Amino acid sequence: MAAAKTLNTQYIKNVKNAPAFGLKDKIGYMCGDLGFNTLQVIVNSYLMLFCVNILEMDAVHFAAIVFICKALDALNDTFIGRTVDRRLPTKNGKMKPYLLWFSIPYAIFTLILFFNVHAMPYMAKVAWVLIVYFIWGIVGTFINVPYGAMSNIITTNQIERTELSNFRSIGSFVASMGTTTIAPLLLFDQNNDPVASRFILLSVVLGVFCTVCLVLAHTLIHERVLVEDVQTSEQGEKIHYLQVAKSFLHNRVMIAVVSSYVIAKLFVQPVSTLNQYVFMTYFQDTSRLAMASLTTLIPMLLGMVLLKPLVKRFGKKNLVTWPLLGAAVLYAFTMILPIGPTEWIICQTLASAFTTCMNLLLWSLIADAVDYQAYLTGQRNDGTVYATITFIVFFAASASTSVIALLLEAVGYDASLGSMGQLAGVPERIKMLGGAWPMIGIILTFICFKFIYNISDERMKQISEELRRKSEETEERILNGKE
Image 1 (cartoon, helix red, strand yellow):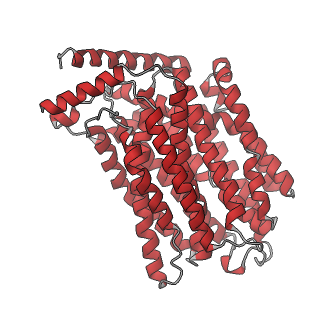
Image 2: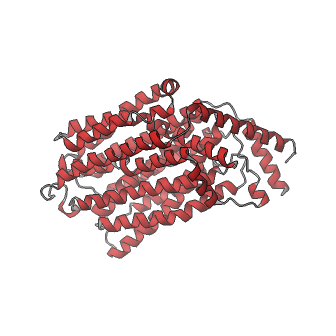
Image 3: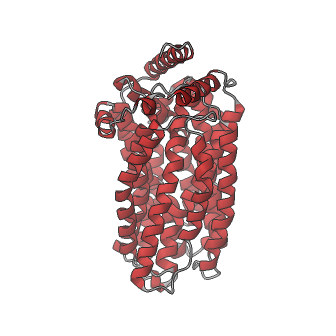
């Protein structure tokens, strides 16, 4: 007990004496998302292609694997969230150590996912992918839950959180753009069909890159806000996961933000996956996939520069709401109009511009929702809260792959016919799907922010400031021996 108390005191002193929030924190948080999402993107965007086209698994069976694994992840996320909340912090922090401990296992299991087990009996292949994918999800959650929870203990300042969210979104975007730009150039042969051995090479390179990024994040980030329930493990108290989950129902900020994130994962994130099949079958030119990814860099770069003044001028809520209507119109154009690959890329680039503020501000909004949760409940169980968010969002992200597999099956796509041998009408239906699916998601996201999100920016600032003062008071009580 005495050792635990000393450990808590060391942690609190480090929190209290942490240097002022600055560029290192922003770069470190960007590196965390850059590394973690690099491997998330390759799995979410290309595992279906690998399993269906290389391992020759039925798309419906692959969809079932993803659904089963994410259903089992409910138990996994609950356990990990509680573990993070109840574990006593070390001198390096409460959340940061997980980035170091699980970076290499995460890279290794990503590599194993892309082992070519085509020669196995069919059911053995299905079992292999099921088991490895499930373990990969467990390891990833041990990184993602504490990493997400860190945003609330790095800073409580709303402008600094906006910058932190900006840099995190940049990391996520660069991970997505880099992977979806490099992968098509490497994975496909001259007939626009994927090559098995190239998936391993890409996994090794990106795995090393991910590990380096997570180590940098651990090194550069500082935790500055005391997690108030730091003595929970010491006193043997339990975090009631179901109570936390139920309390979400009273938090309209949380409902709106998480719902919009889920919708983005289900409808907008699959754009890169759908583009693979649109360019393979309709345009029959996978070399343009790299350009489709690179052009979205332009609005993101502009957003990085303009986000801070735009937030000060219009507020976060307005910036993540009204521009979405422009994106919905552009995706409708790609669905309806008989356009070529250049026009397709232009429309998607402009649509990306209209969703840039939402993408850059998303993690700031999640941090606000978690603060509002702490304000409503009087408890700071950030790990459990983020575990709940992670389960919902990651389930949606992986379910999106299952949904796309089922939709491709529904429109008649047959992987055995190759990219150029699809039946008449199938490429056209895939092209319509590529525009309609993200358009539906954008409209639903607009509804979330317009009609459900109910807290003004000014009120959220007051709530975060109140929580900051409460944290400082707790620090003083513990350091002065009054706890």
